[in-house]
Image 1 (tube, rainbow, N blue to C red):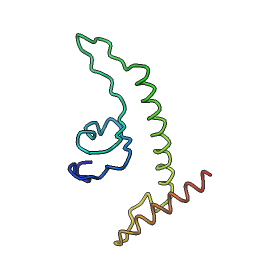
Image 2 (tube, helix red, strand yellow):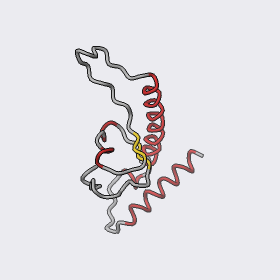
Image 3 (cartoon, rainbow, N blue to C red):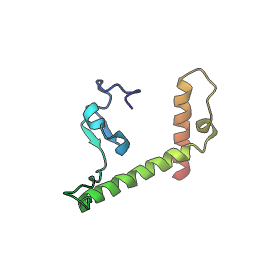
Length: 112
């Protein structure tokens, strides 16, 4: 993520970010009003031989995972269309946005 979005910039100031544990340091690198990360299970140690999350943390993680599944299924559904699965052989960059918007619109129309 740091390669595409430089950490010092104001990329995500007015956006709610829903991230998974792969982006664990994002709350320190990027300034945002809302960064939602799932709770990480604590490490096993001598003081804490059976680490677990609290029931509230588990509930929040399940809620976030349920939302993420819906989003991932929608992205997977858009990949059904040929223009999203294969390389676009066009040098005009705005066509990529058109293809993405068209695929999203068709997929949303299909599930309605």
